[in-house]
Length: 399
Image 1 (cartoon, rainbow, N blue to C red):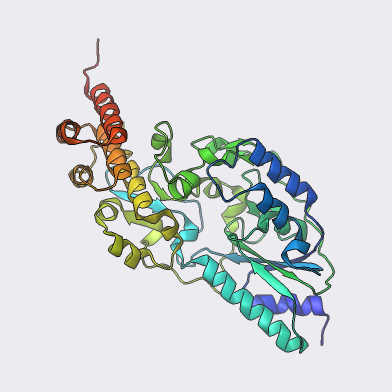
Image 2 (image 1 turned 30 degrees about the horizontal axis):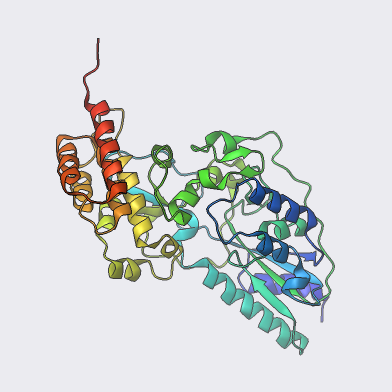
């Protein structure tokens, strides 16, 4: 048989992966210290599962697989071959009732897609070697620090956005690692950097990239639209634009992504999301729990849960306003008024904020009526703030 390392790389491509590199199973000491410092600085606040013990375990391959000798790092592009790969328009498109979903969530659940291919890859190696292979595989739902492994293996390099950038597929890449007891020669890390480019930092609307290679989790649109189970901070809402699940802005503006290659074996597209990641915001607000599950089952959007997605839809509808004078569609106002009767306080509260942003007579009237009947203190505060905002938007300009 040909050299084992060469065989592994060739076979990984045959199994549907776009990139494969090897690194050793030594402790990721520097990456561990950086991650622990981020936790201590509060930059991972809101992610209760991202703990010190998780980081320490995930940076020590021997804890994940006793006897580990190597880590096979895999990359799978999630670009859709029929969608344009050039940066998409990131500004809100007023008057359309359309929201955006991040590219990775436009395909079937990538955890399942990656793990199926990784399992088949390991089983195929065992058949070839005619022996069992000690292996544990991880995507981003395990403790492994996937970007640290990818960087050390030479799969890519850290961009200033903290995304891993690759020479052939940009940052539109899902990362997976197979910790194994096979002894393989490690690949060399890349010497590439972002140079003086700071596009991702300058174009992040929330200022989440607080310094090169440092992201404040709580200011990231992806965190607010996926992980945050509570109210989105008031100051963040106008900055979120029309994103309802995740955000691609730092990737859209990255020059490395301008020539990203498409996947060799694409992940199946999710029918739940329209062309170019568009979803109808009004339709989202009408979904029952059963309808939500039926539509988004098997996609990453499930992580936001129905309440979270509808909360995000309210914010996106509130951001449909425009300084150019194009009013929000009447259907948006009607949907938000209906949402003021939703059983969930979070949805009512964010619908109130959106109506205050739109500030039409119907919107204001609905807020006033709701204030008279609302008993939840949080929602009442949202309504009062929305009425105040609506008054500012509709007040005549003094000469």
